[in-house]
Image (cartoon, rainbow, N blue to C red):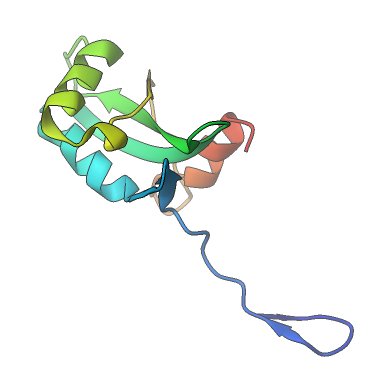
Length: 117
């Protein structure tokens, strides 16, 4: 919570992670769960990125499990077969490591900065 010069209180909380695309509300967690079901991933993180037509699109950042030669298109095809079309990531970026906070959680703000958001 913060107070301005006039004494008004403002509640400051977490940013809404919900992705709004083409009239649909998409839970990043649901998309991450389907990505994990592929069996190829060590970790996945999903964010919404701006799109002029749809409002936002889904972008996934993933790290492959040890010994897996992961192709983004293969993972996208898996998603297309296992979730509604509006939830399928438009872009999947394979990373060597996921950015983490000091407490070891995925650093979503760092992923947004990476996208210029």
